[in-house]
Image (cartoon, rainbow, N blue to C red):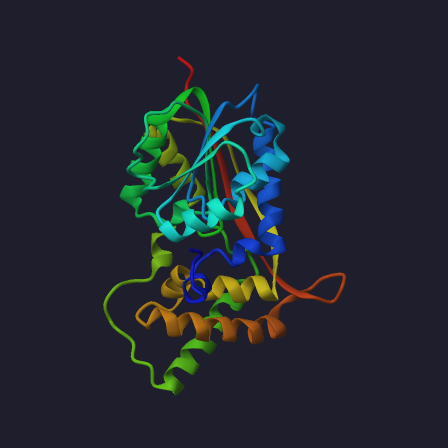
Length: 284
C-alpha cells in the first residue's frame, strides 16, 4: 500500500511534488543530458522515492527513454508507491536496498542519486560512492544533487533561518515541550561542495561538473521543507521530531511573510541553492 498520510507528512516526498522542486530537478537533469554521449542501456536510480527523478529523466533526456532502470530506495513504502505510480513506464525494476550496500553487480551506464546523499553519514556517503563506482561501467556517469549542504544558504538570507528557529523555539517553550540535551544538530554534518568533490574522487570517479543552482522557494515549499522530519530534527535538535516539524512549519510561514523577497507577481520567497555533481568512471 502507499505510505500513510502521517508517514508522508514527515517525509521529503510532499516537497518533491512542488513546482520549484520539479523545476530545479528538470534543469539539473537537462544539464546532465548534455554530458551523456550515446545511449544509456542500464541506469541505476538511488533514493528513488516514488520515482520522480526517473520520470523527469526520461522526460528531459532522450538517451534515457529506452534504458532499463533499477530503482532503489531504503523505504518499502516508497518502493510500493513508486511501482504503482509509474506502472505505465516500461522496464523499471524496483528494489528495497541501501545505497551503501548495493545487492547488484552492474554494470550501469548511469547512476542518479537525486536529493538523497545528504541523509547518509560521512562514512556511508563514501561507502555508497565506492559501491556505485563498483557497479558503474567504464566511462559511465554518476549524478547527484542536494539542497542540504554547506552553501545552500544564499548570502543575505541568514536572518530568515535564524528567525524561523527562534520563533519555533519560543512556541515550543510556550507549549512546555521538553528539549533533550543529547545529540547534535544534523546541519553540522553538512558538507561543503569541495568536500563532496573530494569524496567523489576518493571513490575513484573524475569530476565532470560541480555547480550550484539558485532557486526561489515559496510559501508551500518552505512549509513542506520544515515538515520534513530530517530537516526539523536538525533545525530543532533535541525536541521531539513530530512536534518540532509541525511547529517549525507554522513558524516559517509567518517569518516568510515578514522577511521574504517579493517576486513579479507579489509572491513571497526566499532563494536557496542546490548542489549538482556529475562524475565519470575512467574508461581505462
